[in-house]
Length: 109
Image 1 (spheres, rainbow, N blue to C red):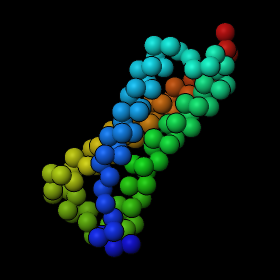
Image 2 (cartoon, rainbow, N blue to C red; image 1 turned 90 degrees about the horizontal axis):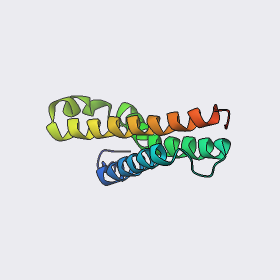
Image 3 (cartoon, helix red, strand yellow; image 1 turned 90 degrees about the vertical axis):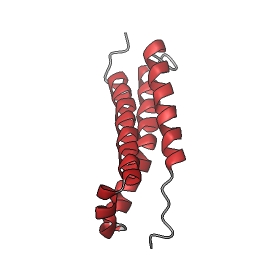
Image 4 (cartoon, rainbow, N blue to C red; image 1 turned 60 degrees about the vertical axis):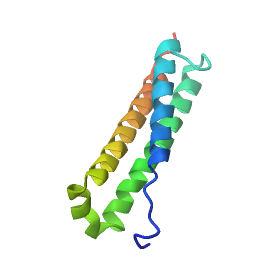
């Protein structure tokens, strides 16, 4: 894969951030989706893994396909913002996964 085929999909990352933020806010208000902690936790973990998949894929692309571009990422402001956007997306995805695992391990009172 050469660099001309690789595009940074910032709109997708913003969409994933929005989905994660809305889900976290809604889940903190409601504390449940279906009432079954096993189903709620499973849905949350799967959603979190989906949200984390794009920034993880971007990291793999950066490590393997853009090895020579690391200097550019450190020196260009737009690349630093793109990297920060990936980290934010990954962090929100981890929070969604954490919400899911807490529901999976809850007793279901």
